[in-house]
Image (cartoon, rainbow, N blue to C red):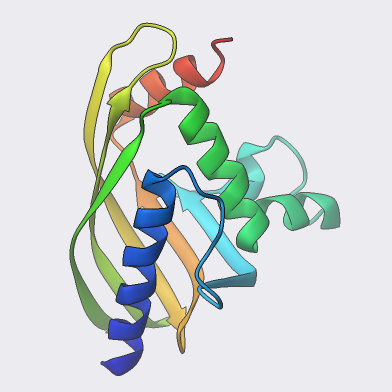
Length: 152
């Protein structure tokens, strides 16, 4: 349980950094293996290229992948804010995982439309490092984010 608690503290630090628009990361939270998954699709595949392409993996995984996604989210919602809910540590077939919710709020860049959505998260761990971070976002909220991200 100590590893889960350590990761939870690092996630709180990450949320605080995100809410301040910082791109720094807590040391060791993500490494180059960390894969991000959105609504069941690995982030690499969302970039429209071969997920095994080394350049795509370099951009889509680890700290770079987090920063790439965070910047896109902050562009779509200039006042984006996160709040973490309770996380539960469970042992699964892929090893230990933290499961819980994150609340995302802000106003869409293009229309000013308010976004308030609950994001289900699942974080697979290797010690104190997240090796896979999956987020499930409401399809309507995700469409609002996509549209706003494309706005100038």
